Length: 386
Image (cartoon, rainbow, N blue to C red):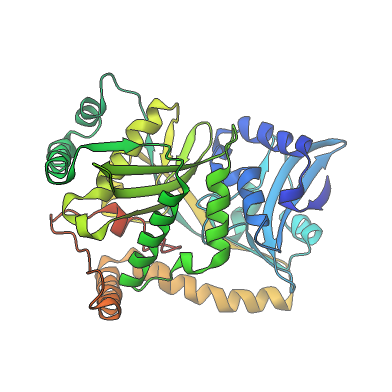
């Protein structure tokens, strides 16, 4: 097995095509976060991004995207943003994890959303977690008929709130693939405000993340398209979501809404509208991402399993990295796994956020008694707190 190292944004057209073929032959690699387009998007703004290309003879059969520091610490490409990680390869291809790290110049490789099929990494997995997904089906008739058939328990309340929203602000309409970059900026502004209200790290305060999202918004390829979806009431945007899709998988990523309109559960309306529209577009799975949230339990049809852990070689840098990172992960996972710990921690963060923003735009609390995914899900009190 020959292994060569490349910049992801500089891969040749033939290598990208080989990557796409490998993903097409294995349904588990259909997620847009496993595409060369996503790796190239990260690589355009992250100097340490690389792709290891595994070749048998003259044929490229595997692709391993990662980021590397000057000390040889490696992490999954886009760690903290990516909801799916893997070495993408043709069926039947095998590799050795230690040999792979040596070829990449890594002492350790950290991951947190590894797909299950990565057998050479199995012994390095320190925990596995549910990643809910929605199997999408195209229904007859319009959105309301689809909603009643797919989610009868949510249909009555959701449709009632949509009608009320329409009466109060203007006709409700949904755009699955909005191409207005100004609306993308509005989404990022809403999301930043939400992060601050809830005392989460503001991802959009980091220029490289803003640049990556703006870049991916412009990507329109067969295997990867950045999709901005918006719910409008009249001419007013109510909620928005940006996420990538492949031909068959749509990834829920960044969702936010106008906090003044939280009463109408706009985040839930957004996710339901996206599921119906994506199914009509030929998407078969909507990936909600790792993390336990009530709205995911309402929407999911099944769960995948993803792993987190560290592949490491015998090296002092690897030892130091594990000693630093594992306790942090362990504490976080303990809090997230136990509602008695998670709920007080979440309340504390919201209280701190309210104190920080007092006198500002308001807390945007959900007054309907139903949790809203733009607040609870996209904050992902999970590994990325997105």
